[in-house]
Length: 367
Image (cartoon, rainbow, N blue to C red; front, top):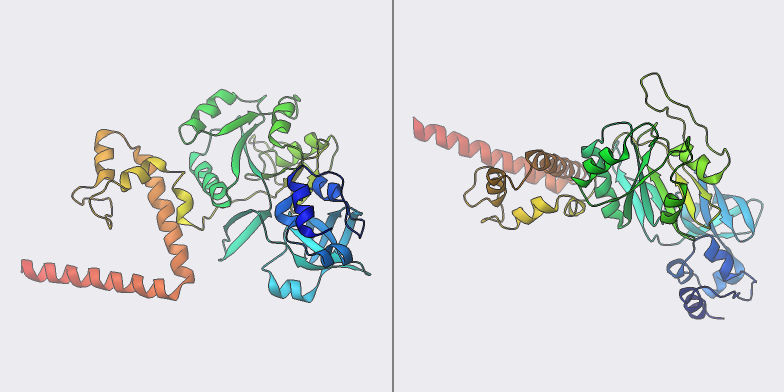
């Protein structure tokens, strides 16, 4: 059976087919392996190697979910040299041995990533289909943080769903109203303590799909994981004296759910640095629409003639807080880009030198 035939079978719904090695396509499908990944495998790799999904990673050692069960593996030297890092959610090709060795990583379908506080890019999760942003219903919604996570999801091209945790302690409708001011997002109120919202959330995590939990420490991600799995797999810290949750999860881990879906629990993320300016366009659609109407392409949206952004502020069509948030994220992304690009650094220095010279000329003209 050729790889093309296997791909057609997977795309058609995954009838129980196998190649000569006896590796069942149905078993790969149950792990969330769709045609995007199967079609990257050669017949030789399918015959001589095995395919697995990283469910845990720590210092070059990984745990794989595979058709042959859960396996512990190490990374081959070429894997360390060729790829930035193997992360939870990645699909890999491995060979049997003592120990099992990961030989290759398949190209990712999606990446949840952020700007690493120390510089560069940090991939939080790979090959996910939906991002579940956990926000506690008993606290005011941090709209600025919500904007950042929405940009991260847009960058990965995955749907962002807001999970309102601790809905037994707060009013989910208040949170929904605050979220609606930012974007039209699907929201699911849940309470693990009161056992409410499980069915609605499981509808989001469809069979063979992968969901990743996002949010700060203490918002209930580990409690949510234990609740959905009906067993204790993650430590939980309860509520602190100030009403906030405790930080407990220290490593990313992927869990299989009873309905055939997959859930990736994440440690809390304190800072959400953005990587790409294009990810802001759908988050701040009203600002982008006004920018397109400005008279000049290089408009700074301050006091230039024909500035549609300033006109939108005057007419009340644009929220000043939204514009301030947009400006801040634009500056942050530009700063990070300059920090890693010497050419941009030189251009920025030249720009400031030119401004300084123009100011000196104006002062001299007044004298």
